[in-house]
Amino acid sequence: MHSFVYRANAVLTFAVTVLALMCAIASFSDNLNSPSPSADVQVLNINWFQKSTQGNDEVSMTLNISANLQSLFTWNTKQVFVFLAAEYETPQNSLNQVSLWDGIIPSKEHAKFGIHTTNKYRFTDQGSNLRGKQYNLTLHWHVMPKTGKMFADKIVMTGFRLPEEYR
Ligand SMILES: *[C@@H]1O[C@H](CO)[C@@H](O)[C@H](O)[C@H]1NC(C)=O
Ligand SMILES: *[C@@H]1O[C@H](CO)[C@@H](O)[C@H](O)[C@H]1NC(C)=O
Image 1 (tube, protein in one colour):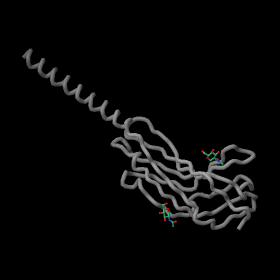
Image 2 (cartoon, rainbow, N blue to C red; image 1 turned 60 degrees about the vertical axis):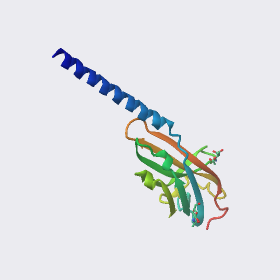
Image 3 (cartoon, rainbow, N blue to C red; image 1 turned 135 degrees about the vertical axis):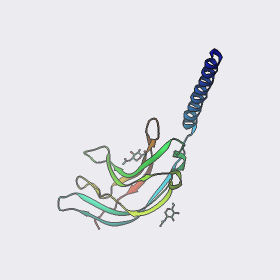
Image 4 (spheres, helix red, strand yellow; image 1 turned 30 degrees about the vertical axis):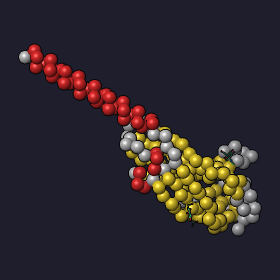
């Protein structure tokens, strides 16, 4: 009897140790994964660019968004939320951020994509600051893990400029 309890205890201890070791390795391997995502966005066309009756500039553009975010996916990744933002400075705000497009990537297989789209959300300014405005297009992502903390990062694409005239 004594030896049975002792043996059971030993087996349990061994199992717990193995489990703890597996967890440690798993979380370590997640940390070892240093993602190397890539993205490229082109503005294929300015469809129209005007000032609304309220006096706010608004632009409609056709975008070509390509990205490979496959390296963000590990065994512990549930899904990845991505959004593309136009970012620019105005006299009132050092950072204006307008979300133009977003999506949820459910799996690694879907994490390499090319999308040809007009802006899904309105690219509108709180004023008439957009003529000739330099802006960045930034692809932001939030990685939602199965366990542990969410993390976010981005790729900034610089050097975009809006037309000088409404059209
Ligand atoms: C969109 O971008 C991809 C990758 O940069 C490129 O291969 C493709 O030709 C582009 N499509 C258009 C319509 O410009
Ligand atoms: C665009 O991105 C560059 C590099 O991150 C940054 O220095 C610059 O201030 C940004 N421009 C705007 C208008 O946000």
